[in-house]
Amino acid sequence: MLSFNSSNIASKTRTIGRRMFLLNSIKAFVVLGIFGRLASLQINEAKKYRSLADKNRFRETKFAPPRGIIEDYFGSEIASNARIYQLHIVPENTPDVEKLLIRLKNLINLSDRKINLILKKIAKQKRWESTIFLTT
Image (tube, rainbow, N blue to C red; front, side):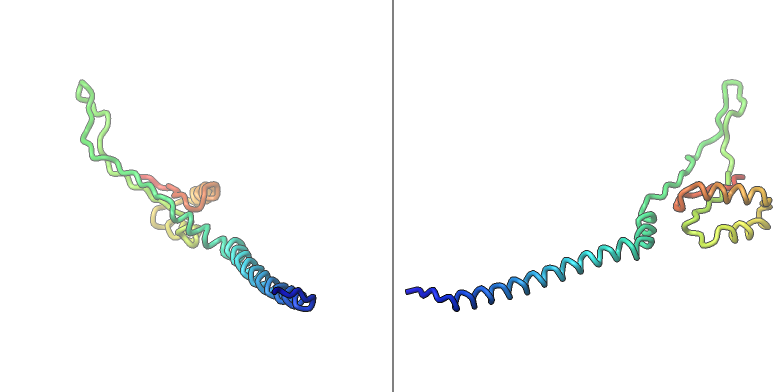
């Protein structure tokens, strides 16, 4: 037969209570570890992952299709192919934009006014967007 001693029930209750405390302590430790890592990723490493996400975007480059000279009915030239060169800057990929513009100033004859306009244009755009500042 089963015996229901009060001391036997009390010792089993204490044993179960200790096991539950140990199990709940382990669960709390794991949950705190997960939340700690989540906070670390969101606060300490946010800049790194934001930059990686931005670099993961598509970069669109437009190429003009090869065409010949387009003339009207009377033989006047409406459109023709001419080589056009553009200088693009992506601020995120350039460590120091101002230093780059100063170096380019001597090569392509940029004025100080033009440099200031370019810097203002870059400041208004997102860091991963390409800025066209010279077309010839």
